[in-house]
Image (cartoon, rainbow, N blue to C red; front, side, top):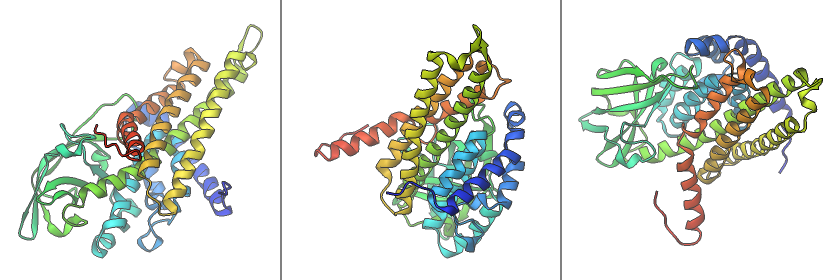
Length: 382
C-alpha cells in the first residue's frame, strides 16, 4: 500500500491548514468561553465547499475522497475540535446517508441546501432510555395515508440548536426507520441545550416530537432500513471522530513541545529533562500510530470495503490516544496547562469527549470482541 499523499491531497491539506489558521484559530478561545456555535466559520466553510466535503459536485459539494475528508477533520480539530465535530456530524451523519440512501428527489432537495449551509444537519438517534442499545427506541413512526406521525423524545442531538434538517430514527411496523424532518415541521420542538465539560461550541439539544407530521416521502430508505442506515452513518462518523482525535493530539504535542523549549527550570529548558523527553516521545509514538489507522480506515471507505470492524478499532484507539496525549502534554506544561488562558486546557476537555460521543469506548470494545469471537463460532451479547 502506498501511504504517500497524492499531489491533490497535499494541495487540499495546505488549503485546509490555511483556512483553519485564518478562520478558526483566532476565534476559538472566545467562542469556547462564550459556549457559542461557530456559525461564522461554518458560513465560510460552506463557501469553500467543506459543508459538502464528500458530496459530489453535481449537488454543490466538493467531491473529496475519504482520505482528504479525514485530513479536513484532522486539520480543523487541531485548532477547534468543536468545529470539526459540528462539521463531521453534518457531513458524515446526515449528508452521506442522504447520498447513499436518498431518492433522487430527496438528494436534489436537500443536498444542495446542506452543501451551501442553508441547512445544517443534525442526527437524532439517542433517547433517554436508548443510547448504544437502539433496540430500546421508543420514538414511534405511525403511517397515516401519505403522512407519517412521529411521537417521541430524542436527547443529545448534536447540532440541534443550529440545525435546519434532522435525521430522525423511529420504530415503525417493519422495524427501525429513518426520516428527514425539516426544522419547521409541525410538532417538532428543539428544547434544552446540554451544558458540557468540553466541546462547548457544539450544541447538544433535546428534541421533542409531539404529533410531528411529515410526508411519507420523507422516509430515508425503505421500511425497516433505519437500523442499517444508522449503523453505516455511525461507522463513517467513527472514522471522522478518530481523525478529530488525531488532530487534537498533534496540536497538543506541538503546543507542549514548544513550551518545553521555552520554560527554564534549574538553569535549562525543561526539554533537556529526560522525563519531559519521555512524555513527548511517547505522545509522538501514539499519534503516529493513530495517523496510519485513520488513513487506512479512510482508504477502506474509498475501496468500498466493510468498515464496521475497523471503524470501531480506529474510534476506540483514537479516543485513547487523544486522551493520553493531551493528558501527558498538560503535565508537561504543569500549572499553565491547567489554566483556561492556555489552549491545552480546552484541548484536554475536548479530547475527553471522544470516549463518549459516537458510541462509548466500551461499546466499540464489544463490537471488536464480537467480531473476534464470531470467527471462533461463539456469539456474545453486550
